[in-house]
Amino acid sequence: MRKNNGSIGEGKAEDCPVKEIQRALRGRPDGKSDDERGVTMEMMMRIEKYVTAAEKIIVGLCLALMSIGVFANVITRYFFGSTIRGAEEGVRYLMVWLVLIGGALAISQGSHLSGSIQSVIVHGKKSTHILNSVLDLLALVFGVSFLYYCYDFFKASIEMVSWAQDINVPMPIVYLAFPLGSLMFVAHFVVRLVIRLKRGWESEG
Image (cartoon, rainbow, N blue to C red; front, side, top):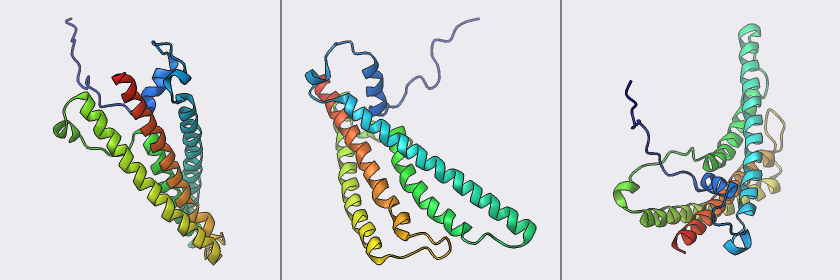
């Protein structure tokens, strides 16, 4: 039987810089220390690790509570002809947390939708690196701006002291998802940008 040397999907898209630096940190051929590199990559990866772990816990809890709430509400409606008071409202607010925190988690996993038009716009490894760095910087600027307005929004919700109508939960707890999610968003892109720029400096050095 003849062995096929080529395989479909052999060419892979560019890996997330965080995942690439994780592989690089396991074994360094140049033997340089972090001080010699100028940027402490272990600290960057530690931030990424803790933020990602917190996001996974929050997303997991939101999914579990949403599933329980929806399932219990369906059972009571089908068998008893009534719904659980506050179930729909609680699931709606959990969805807010899930979207904002899950969106930040998708950054570290490289799970956001992306286009492949950069291969048409730019050519060459250096040009692609510059384009990706600019895109990360723009995303970081957007994240910082979003964080600023989310903080004002959260601060205003504390001053209003409003409560959810059915589940009787302070609304600032619900709105906390906005500054927290945007802060995680910013943290991921700071790590991505530092790693990407450092990788570019090392390749040119």
